[in-house]
Length: 100
Image 1 (cartoon, rainbow, N blue to C red):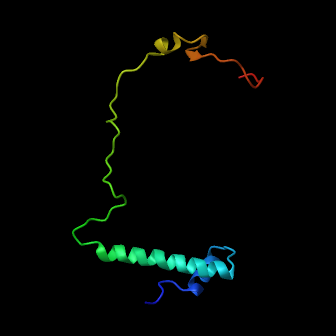
Image 2 (image 1 turned 60 degrees about the horizontal axis):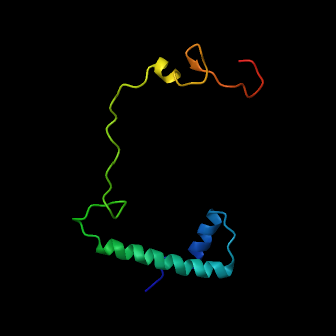
Image 3 (image 1 turned 180 degrees about the vertical axis):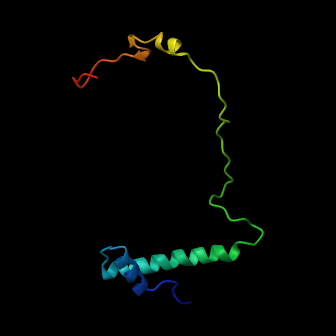
């Protein structure tokens, strides 16, 4: 069985990705990538036409609740617990020393 990816192809990919790879690393990476590509090919052989493609092994469902408009606090209610307010807004201590 021939390799799915050659050492030269790995070297080419490393150059494209601007990765500094030693000769020893090229041999290791070529072997590892060959195993990975072989495994992916085996999965492709097993996949039947009646199985829809998916990105997860477990079906995912949106668990968010419906976005329903609900009444909230009025401006006066929201400011009622504030230590200080001014012109209908929260008043906070000045931190930058600049005038607003």
